[in-house]
Amino acid sequence: MWGFCRIFFVTVLFIQFAFLLSLFYIDIDTWTKTSSKILRFSGLRCDNNPQTSDFLKLKTGRENDVLVLAPPNTPLQYPIRGFRVAPMTKTRIPGLAVQTQNRDFYKVSLRVQKGLLSVMDVKDDKKIVFGQNEENLTISSSSLEHLNELLSRVTYTSTIFHIKTEDLAYFSFENHEVIFPIEIRRRSVPNLYDPGKDINSQVTVLVKAFLRYKELNALIQSIRVNYPKIKIIVADDSLIPEKVVGDNIEHYIMPPAQGWFAGRNLALSQVTTKYFLWVDDDFVFLNETRIESFVEIMEAVPELDVVGGQVGRNQFAFKLNYEEGNSEEGGCISRVRGFYAPLSGFKGCFFVDGVVNFFLGRTDAVRKVGFDPFLRKVGHSEFFIDGLGELLVVTCQGLRIGHQERTNTPEYRKYRYPPKADSQNKMTHHYFKNHLKCIKY
Image (tube, rainbow, N blue to C red; front, side):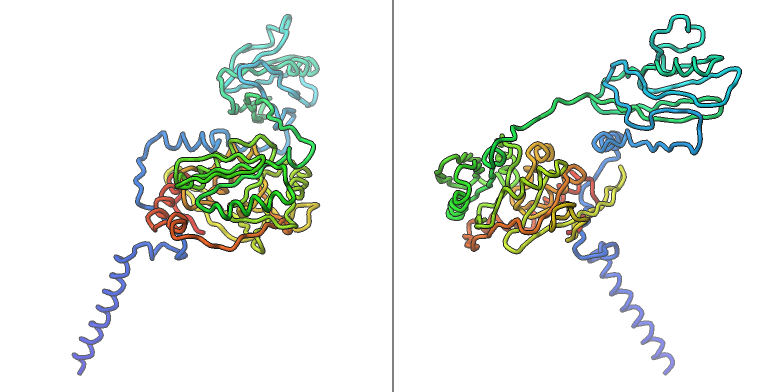
């Protein structure tokens, strides 16, 4: 009897072990996934190229991310931030001074890595200023007043040409040393838009069309009820294009099935107004759809780049949680429904990272981010992922547009709902492009 029980017990243990082992080989990711919706990328081989880390630093500006902490107490006065110079242009460093008790002798030194230091108009002071037009500068004097007068004439000239970089200046006196940043920036030319006299000269309506001409014409007719003169730009990649007629409509024919984001880029490239309103080709303007309400918010808060509304009762808006990786292993990003904080002065408006396909965009800001033309059939959140940290986005209740009854043909559905392979290719693209190891929608 005892032998039978022992054999039975060993057999049960063996079956349990075999079951667990089979699970492991069926889906090894089962042991690492925290959610069935988390997508992890392991199929792309990344070589350990030393240029990779340099590229990531350049792309993210990491080469300038140096934490500078002000000491708790120092006799040195200096610009802790805000000192900006043009590349290879001599500029006086503001605010340098020493505040201390009387001494018989005072000596300070400054050093930089990407530029040269000098004291302007040095004549009789040559013996007490050492290192003129060098990376290391030393100034000494028996008079504190004289020392500070010399410090007020210290200049910096970068020796490298770069449109956006930074140097660090080390300023020391006795056993005290402080560090302050020097921003090296090439000044950009302002890009202004004619503010216009009415909504027609402030906003252009953009539409990406594909096959659904009945819905497109219904949309245009609904726009013309309250906005008979506003410009409408249609980017059309239909297989067999049809003519779209009407006043102040620009209809751009693309090669067939070039895709969603390629059409957005084309339409946006033709905008000459300060703002554009994005709508889908099967939306419909309601009596309550007022473009002026979007513009009012944008004009009141010039920092905003995108204001989203509602499609019917759908106020789709989301936050993007991004956990940054390193040069060896990418980060993780997840999309969650919700808001950050209310927009002061506008009831029902909240800061978010992404909104529904009905939004007013600031033309120059959105152009800088652009729409990835790799995304042909499926893509929306990906635009806001690319704009993370670049675009300031809000969603507002009450800014509503309607949605026409869905009557998609089999041909349209074939393009609208791509096979699984397309979705996998899209995810592979984003794992590489955005340097990710996991995405959660």
